[in-house]
Length: 290
Image 1 (cartoon, rainbow, N blue to C red):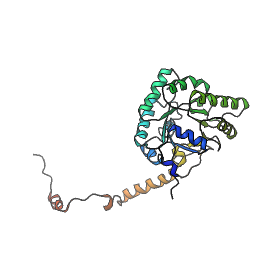
Image 2: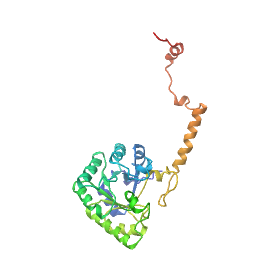
Image 3: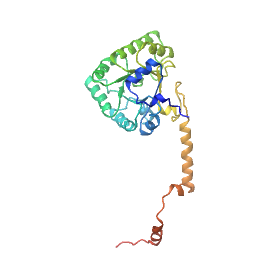
Image 4: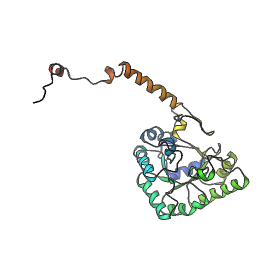
């Protein structure tokens, strides 16, 4: 039985997301870093994010800070070639939107030229100038507040944000500022559920939660987390719907064992010569040097 609502078949656009917010329809968003993950996720979710989390998840980096525009462009192009239905958002990596409006516009515009529908950037009121510059150039922007991975060093690690009254009020002010600057949606990461609920009920734009409780307009999880493809500690907000790492770890040694005992490949995995070639091949001997 399909778990895809009939209404999900339409191509997702930014105006559709705004309409779904008003209708109370919850949004599903996940990451995609390559053609395989895009083929799996695109028909099933509303938003695909080519996240700078590719650094942690796929490239073996400790955090997202070393991820470059070139890395992001490489993965974005693979997803864009494959995506057909979901809204495609690309993360602006560290230092790609911090130096000047001209650099920010050039970098974000390059992502749209490579197939993205929108970009996402981290930070509150201090990013308003860059967001307005992008929106003025018709580049749609998704904001990101709460725990922002590019600020992991300043924040002292992966910590829940907005736990004091002052911090919570600052986040609400930042959320409103980003909406007024032109963001079409806002990711809320690693904040108390009550704070995310207050932001969601106050803002006109959709909120996408990750570690922000159940009251957001939608939820985002990393593709590999949803499918259990990562090993080791899982954050509190992750729910794995498969144990993909274990499944693959079981499959590969079975294949290797079949190779070693000669049972792979068999006739079904092998090509055969036409019958009239067999005799010529059997009679062949090396001719040696001439």
